[in-house]
Length: 467
Image (cartoon, rainbow, N blue to C red; front, side):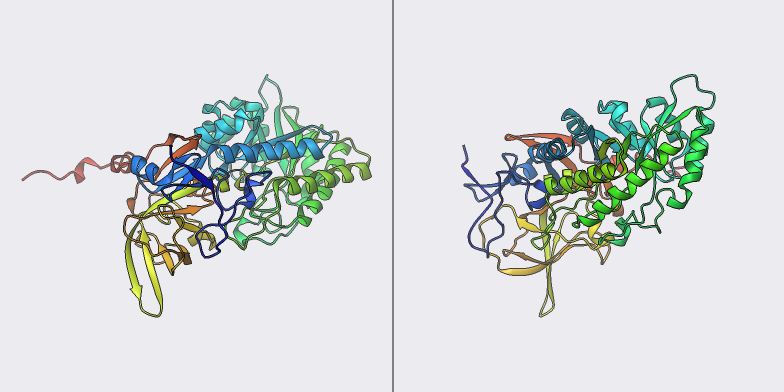
């Protein structure tokens, strides 16, 4: 048996930083909670040697730590139990990473699922998630997607007038129970995050404008086939501030009071998600507990001021549930040294398995997993293998001297990495494994070249004929 010790050393010139295992909020850690270094000086996640995982499953490889994911889920639930005296439900915002295994884990600990497409809805249902715990978001759901939602019995979060009219038409001849919907409204709240992931300000493609609220409520009150059970708002993603969420609670309770004047049975408030995670040493997000406390206290205070009964409180974290639970392992390849300018080291993946750096200018932290105690001796730029100058995973990374064949691990890749992965340059998408207690289970198979042409069609007239 190989001995291990938790991540943590005194020498700041080493690759890794201390990790707190007791009462740790996973979103505040760079590594998954089970990260350790074994006697071979190799990184372990979930009791599995990362270098051995690469030998078995290849690279690039997503490595998902089940314990960290479950710990994040429990912390949201425990915090809501502690701070909210009413009914509540945690939803996993599955756009962060929607696959059968992740949805099944979330459901197994009592979470519902937030989906944003017919594909995510189908996957969640196939994973065994109860339809009454699935909430279907999206700003341009097709008629086919809406019909699938109606058939499944999930709750539809209505985003705009077209969708509202379409649902009224699709359900008007139904003899079954009225369709449960929530309304997404834009609260007009700004937060300091990347402009692409700010969704609460008025200039957003999501949600009804607050100025339309009376007209929307009046329309719904006249639709016997639709029941508005709740209101939804979401102010953005990778947020470290607390004040915007306090402001959001106050605004949403005002909407709740207005809904009652139209006789709408609104009983749920969904305050969205958006809590950030620690991607680099400089990031300092609030803990899950602190974020939930702010939300709960703000909703309770606003309801008390309006003399309203507490609604069922929903939140839908995504990144802060799964982001820190996963790492991506790469194999180091070529090196290019430009004297007095930059040194590039290339890995066998890049923007096709992690498009966030090129899309959002996102920053990450990396280590060399097969030499964890090696001192940091060089500053390099980690480049992907794609035919794109912007395919850079990390600029100016502090690493030990690397060699071809080293295993480079990038932390915090659970959110919006696999879910946004592509086949750019016709690279097969990577495999993913779930690790726990020294056992690794494949949850996504590595694509093959045959998979890449699976949906291609070659017209007969283009088939080369032998001479």
